[in-house]
Length: 173
Image (cartoon, rainbow, N blue to C red; front, side, top):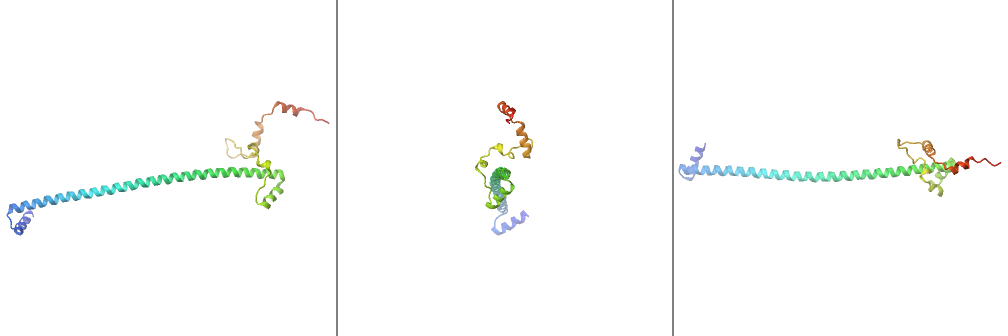
């Protein structure tokens, strides 16, 4: 086949055989070199594409991490809000129960129905933690009844000696 090309080149350019062989070899070398350069260019473009894709992936990872952190902070905020609302609910239930005991069931329920809100006297608003038995929690359990809480409080109650003496006095007739 190379010999046929040499014959065609010689006839076309009207040159001798050695010159035609030399021209064919030069053309073959140029073709091979161009092929190598084209392959190198394709490899470089491919590597550039890979680097761009890698950078995009890194950006997406950063965005996902930021969104995950925001999501976690929102969940923590909501959890805190839920805890606060649970505390307020416990206080409200305790206040309602206290009102029911002080006023009787009918009066406090009528007050709630009439005004739409639970109105509390001043001394009920200034309750200490000891007044809210439902707030106290047992370390072993999250669920504790008011009776258990009061029993525990009375068991650890310290009675001063002066108070014991008051209890031992005979009644006046």
